[in-house]
Length: 126
Image: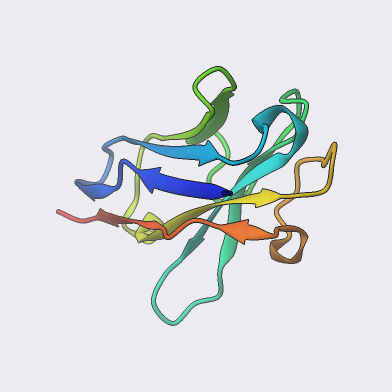
């Protein structure tokens, strides 16, 4: 059974860091692209980062470049998003998602993704 479970969210002060984890099961991480999206209240879901099925290509939203890093551990079947220098505007529910096209490239387009986790709340506030 395919499953994505996010963890690692919480409350952090501006300038702080968090690492989100996405535990995958029911499919082979090596074959499919994974993305991290976020959605703040009243806003559309936004593609934050993505890693290709091969693991050698990543993409980032301009708003997080240089602050967020996506990575994966295929042995642990887990994808991570390290978030540094957090800002109040990073506050959102963060979701991980999988593109179930074999050999999928990194993409931040929401319609490329097929299955979503339940999300984890990240709040950046003093």
